[in-house]
Image 1 (tube, each protein chain N blue to C red):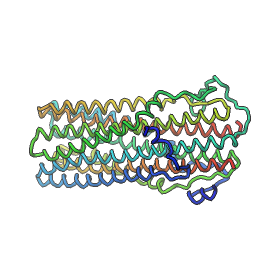
Image 2: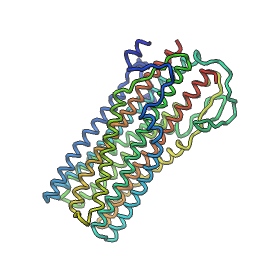
Image 3: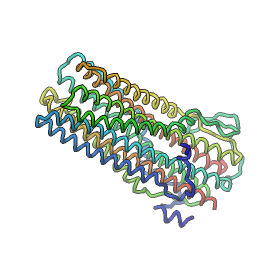
Length: 315
Length: 204
């Protein structure tokens, strides 16, 4: 089964079918929230242990609690990805409906757009072509990469969760092994989170690609000039932020792996002081890119509604 | 088909152009400032943490290191609360585009404008987002209070204990936000399902 079949309607489904993706996605998000609640209790329990002077018990609890927290966030992100897959299928149905009905709704009035021109609209610069626009490399990449990114993310996240329990069991027993497990846990889990957010970004890129392709197909079918939004600044910045975030996520993992070879406690403390924030910065950059991707989708949808209304009204 | 729509969805109908509802208006206005604030929070937070790393390396006083750690975490989470808000506002903006664009299209085809009343997922989306925001903002305020007092009226040990508790609050806040984002996207799915069916109706 190819990756693309996952984002196309299954046999026997129609636009009216309630797809399972939404329920599954929300269920995963709710499971994530429940796991996070367990870790909240764990943190308060660790604080009580520390207050009572039992630093080892507190350290053990905080270690596995860290692993479970990141697992909770990752589970919710997988849920978001599942819902996005459902949205891709829904966009397919929407396109199918628009293609089926627009020939009967179009006013048939001559279009004001001239092939070969470039115009600026309230939604941004557009190009007017005779043929549907070719798929952009970034859209092709998004269509290919979302699933491997999600799969790698889940694997890294689970591996990190296992090492979190190893970290916990070594606290107060073997300081070196505990430190090494801690480094592996943080590096692996945040690499996993970065992959998951990249997978989500690629799914959003796939949505943008599908909107672009669908818009071209509808206009071509009606025999009209194909008006397409040029890639806006928000989309370009989205790609840059996503790449930066992913690179930071990989870099922090490499540095944590290097960190497992350090034995000097001061050096370990210094590394921990900036590697933690680096991994957070990585996720922050990826999330900032996602904001821009969503804003771009809103803009593209606004443009497409405007174009469709123009075709219907003959503007 | 009308029966299908009426029985499958909670609808409102209008002969005039549907306008944005309040969360969608907020989404339109606030996604960009939230995006800008998130980048500032991440950069400032990372900078403060680099200063903390330098302080650790130089063997600075524990109170100074704790202070920088709390300030750095507060700034970093200004970034996170802003970016999660930016995501939720951008989702609200998309929902607004569907509402206004879908309404305009129906009116252009000489039909009444049918639009969805806010589904339960939409309501839960807003509620969980608000809860997530309150928890994280509460955590940020807590970190700033601790940073202001540690080394003075607050011991290092007390600051450490509070850091563990504040971390718990932040975690819960992030989880609420993530579930809220999932619910917002689920609302988009429902709107797409409705519009796919409604478009076919317009041709009749």
